[in-house]
Length: 480
View 1 (cartoon, one colour):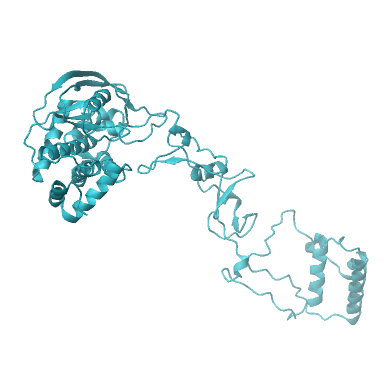
View 2 (cartoon, rainbow, N blue to C red):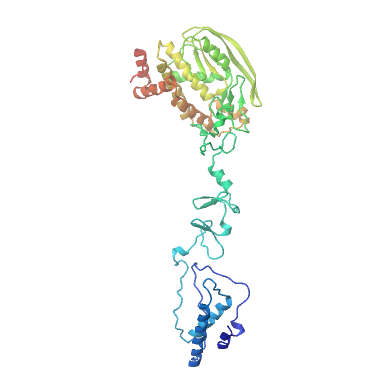
C-alpha cells in the first residue's frame, strides 16, 4: 500500500486513537455522526484525478486476486477508506445525501429490544436472548426468588425465567402430610389424594401407612404435628379439640339447649330422657344389646336406646396432659326404661357442633318413638332425623355473628378460647367445622342416611316440616 502514501500525505493527526473502542449495535435506534469532511475548497488538477483513478483501479485488481472467503478488513483499511472518501467528496457543498436522523421512539418496532426483566429498552452492550425475549445480563433473574440465574439449565414460564428448583416449588405439589414432593407414578403423572372439603393434598401411600386421621374432621396428621389421643384409640386434631366436649356434665347445657330448639319448633319432648357421654367400647356394647335401630357404618357416634342396659359413662376428665386426655373417671350406670326411650348415648371427645348434631339426630329418634311413629323404613326415619340435625347445624352456623379470632394451636385447646367456644362464643374455626358437618350430611353416600336425607330434605323444603311429619305418620312414607 506504499502507492497510497505517495498519493495522499496523511499526517499523524489522521491516525487511529487509543485502544479503547465503543461499538454500538447496528440495529439500535440512534443517529449516526456524519463522516469527517475536508474544508479545503481548492479544485483538483486533472493530473491528481488521473492518479486517483489509477490508484482505485490498482486496489480493485489486488482485491480480485484474493480467493473468496479470505478477505480481511483491518482498522487501517477503514481509515484509508474514510480518507479516500473524504478526498473524493471534499467541496464546499458536498454532493452526498446526508444519513437520515431517526429520533428515539421512531425506529422500526423490530429493531427495538425490550428487556423482559426491567421492561426497559436494551440500548447497548451484551444481552441474553431466550426464545422471543431479551434480557440485560443483570436482569436475567428468577421470577420467584429474584436471584441471578447462573446455571446452564433453567425453566421458563411464559416470558419469566426461573431456577429449576424454584419452578418445581411453584408447580410441583407437595404432600401436606409428609411435606415431600408428591411422587410421579409409573405413567409419568403426579398422582395424589385430596380431601373433597378441606382440599388437603397428600401422597396415596398415606391411605394405608397408618397415618393418623382426626375422627371428627377426617384430616390427616401432618408430620411435625401431634394430634390428641383419646383412651379409646380415637384421634382429634387441634382445631376439633379446641371445642371438644369430654364428659357428661360438660354436655348437659348443650343437651338442654337442643331440647329448647325442638320446643321452639312446636316439637316439645315432655319426658326426661337421660343423656350420657360414653367411650367407643361402651357404645358398641350398647349397640349389640339394642334390638331395634339402624346404625351408621363404619362407626356409630350416637344411639337412641330403647332397652334397659347398664352403660359405662364418662363422668369426668381431670386435665389434658401433653397430647392425651388423662385422668378420665367413668362409672357404670343402670338405665331403666320408663318410656319408649331409655337414654341417649353419644361418643365423648367430639367438637361441640358435632356433638350437638348427633344429639339433634338422636332426639328426633326419641321424638318419633314418643309420638307413636312405628316401623318406619330406615331411609324415612334416618332421613328425617338427619334433616333435624342439619337444620340445627344450619341455625348454629348462620347465627355465627358472635365470632372471635381462631387460635388453633396445641395450647389453645386448654385456654380461655376453648372455654368460650363451649360456652357459645363460636370461633371462625368452629363455624368452618359446622359447615363441614353440614357438608357431610348432605353428601353422605349411604342409602339410608344420605339418600334418606336428600329425599326428606326435598319434602320439607316443598311442604314444610309439619306437613311432612303428618304425611309420615299417616303413610309411613315421605311425600313426593
